[in-house]
Image 1 (cartoon, rainbow, N blue to C red):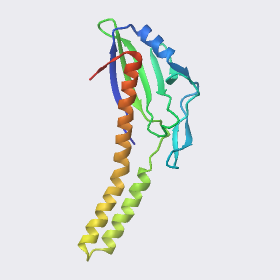
Image 2 (cartoon, rainbow, N blue to C red):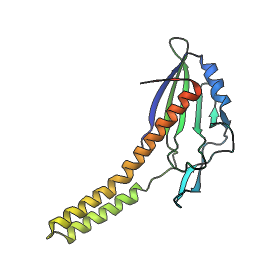
Image 3 (spheres, rainbow, N blue to C red):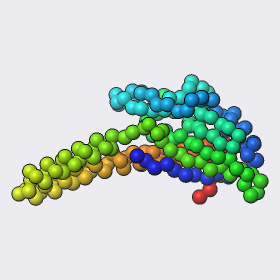
Image 4 (cartoon, helix red, strand yellow):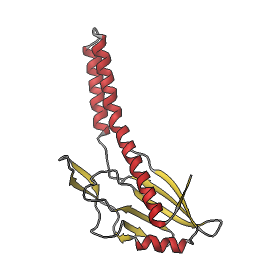
Length: 181
């Protein structure tokens, strides 16, 4: 599974002001985040975040010094890689706000990586057992098994990483924050 991404932002505004701005852009979501099944443009059923019908760009919960939000996915954006942003607001040394957030996938989101790993193990074992006397087929089968095992996990990490970067930039733009390294 993709690893959660940690980000930090700074704002010259006090925490109360950043919290009010966040609250103004967030549709309330009681009971946490849930997943739903949706048909993608390619005809594949995908699990994605279930979002309320709203004009707000975010949905979730915003409390005094903490929040848990996600961007409302568009109807065309059907992917299981929408990050949930959980963060805290704190007073910075200059009197502004330090926002620390973790962007993570939904805990129930799963990839097919274990199934692909099993398939890769079967393919590699079969290649080794069957093609010991034919080195080119043996190497080809083992290489294909390696790709079969690695590609889905690599693709999931890359797509989730891209989704996290986009979400962090959108959050910074929405709340007028400066991203810190």
